[in-house]
Amino acid sequence: MRNDMARRVSAELFGTFWLTFGGCGAAVIAAGFPAVGIGLLGVSLAFGLTVLTMAYAVGHISGGHFNPAVTLGLWSAGRCANKHVVPYVLAQVVGAILGAAVLWLIASGKPDWVPNGFAANGYGDLSPGKYALSSCLITELVMSFFFLFIIVGTTSKGAASGFAGIPIGLALTLIHLVSIPVTNTSVNPARSTGPALFADGEYMSQLWLFWLAPIAGAMIAGALSRWMYEPDVLIETIVVEERTPA
Image 1 (cartoon, rainbow, N blue to C red):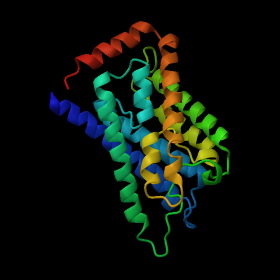
Image 2 (image 1 turned 180 degrees about the vertical axis):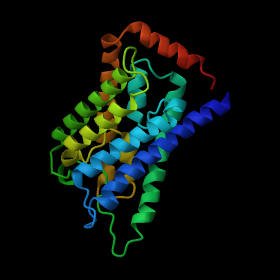
Image 3 (image 1 turned 120 degrees about the vertical axis):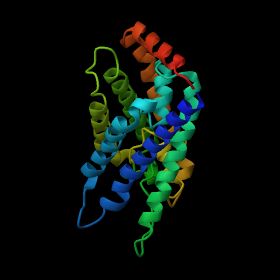
């Protein structure tokens, strides 16, 4: 029983590690490298690919949340059992911090390298496009809402079975294409926490926004999904979750 929870938590840790390391790594290492120069499109695609690949690698073990906002949003939708919420969130935060730490160790091996923003998220002077707090709040709220809405919709009864990882990964890519200039894209409190710990400047003081807005947006979407999708599907999901050994 305990082994099942350990496997679930490990899957969330590895998935969030890969998301943070791969997505932020594309921004920190590849995006500014003259010989590569993948730019905004490349970084956006990298984040989408991290979710896509891990959704198929470990999604069948834990559900493939890799994001505290997704976990709480799915809980709000009735898709995540109470007993999984805290262990998942803790594992996600630890995974993101470890991913950022390994990325820092690699990036710091380059002569004269400085962390600067280290792919962290910010508003005002710390926003890539110097967007105001209000713009960043709205962006993170709306993007997180639709990300969770897409997750619930693509994993609901009637959706194409076995293909949810593809639209979810593409959704995250699209989210980054739109919001990187505004907030450097969070929609994930764990992903924001890891890089903020290693970044220069006041990124930690702005971290509250990248917990508040993604969680609020995702939980609103989760609550709406109880009306949008069939109630018996949500109830069935809860029953399956509660019967799973832990």
